[in-house]
Length: 421
Image (tube, rainbow, N blue to C red):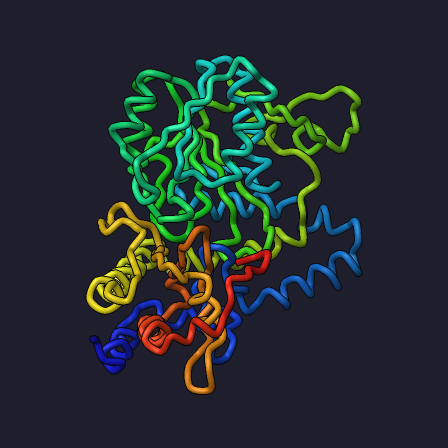
């Protein structure tokens, strides 16, 4: 077992150690749920206070011309730096679910691809629901649901076989929500192009945790949320990326006034805006968009490669502890061991997973509260956001998992679950 002193030395040498102070941090609490909802940056109250009091409260509608209209474009520019694209290839607004429906419907209506949609059993449920709903709208669609023999890793050969046999539109999560499997993005993009298909990537569990390069990976389309590793706040707006070459080939099926060429002319006839602006829909959600900017600023300042390097070091520590200390206590690793195929959370399983989660969250007078999350049937997800998770935090997590089983303290909690786990 590695000593606490060793973990503290790793923190002293950590190039990202000063970033934690940029977030609200609860005393005696270790937050390992940033893969679900990221922490709040410390300057958010000031930013939102200014927006509410000075702009909304004071300037009212004048704030549109003075600052609000440019906010979505500014976010696109900053995300373009992170993802290596043009700012004109990214639009902000709506939820990830709405954006996914919007782009899948646009692809179907374009007629540029066969009427096949491929997805798999590792994809996030809302993506599957959207696809199921589209099947009801378009009975001609053939849905190919690729089911692997496990919930940890994709069988890439099996996925390729399905793409070859059923070319069309493919929908995948770049980093999967349950096991944290990380797909070979460029390999699959190239294979899809070769077989006259296109992949729509859901980046929600990947953006801000792994390096994503749209140009190098030959990505055509992607959607993603901003409230996990990007720390944009609960329900913060998503983004949509469409490669420049596809802009003129796809029509926006949700024709909102902000997608009009001249929205403030109030012309009763719709005329689509140029470039990707025609994929804008309704009025931008200004309050939540203001909160998004701090998260992307911190990520850019830290550098995604630095974030990834620390994430790998920290996840390897947890995996080593599972193998050496925790496997004999009933814990099993449910994430890929290969670091090149893993994002930034570690999933473990245990027959008493929900009770263990409750015990971790309770803490004690001498131990911090530890906030992971639970996913059915018996998964505990340990989300590593290197911007605010220290190496010492991991020492406490490993030791508490060991203590909770050894002491049987998890028996003090029942199996009744809250709505959000």
